[in-house]
Image (cartoon, rainbow, N blue to C red; front, side, top):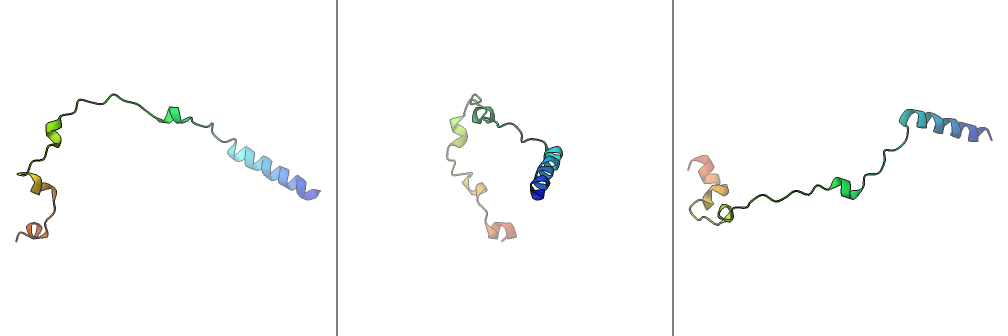
Amino acid sequence: MENHGAVDSAAAVRHARFGKLPERIRFEEMVEEKQASAHDPARDAYNPEASWTSFSCVAADLGL
């Protein structure tokens, strides 16, 4: 029975040091809903003249 007292005292020390677990957070409290901003479809349109700017080219990086 001496071991049982040691377990209780260890639990008491642990509870005094760490206290209790934080309260659970509901999923609804973690989600934030915002109104979408106005979207400009021309911004996402394909532009063949400027398409080369989004790719990396080793020859161009080396100035060849």
